[in-house]
Image (tube, rainbow, N blue to C red):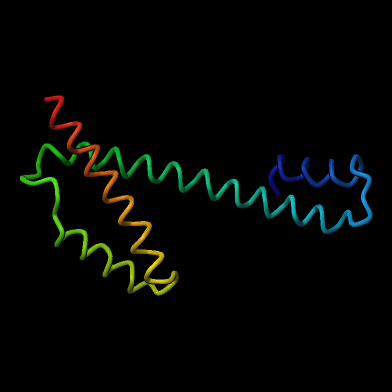
Length: 108
């Protein structure tokens, strides 16, 4: 167990006066886990955008619908998330990359 998580649990045990301390500990534990997951998603998106910026030098066009569709199809095969959700999220990512690529090309 990580030290920060252990401190979080201890603080709940000793400093929070509540009728449901166990549920508060669980709530805070899962909030902690969600925050860590959010941090990972944020960093992964940052990495993806950095790679996309580097890739723009080698691309002949900003929009490559064939590539975008192949990414979506690959993700759909995972079957972990709803297809509409995957499409909505990745459409936003693709749009953001297009904007970054256009800005990068314009600055050249």
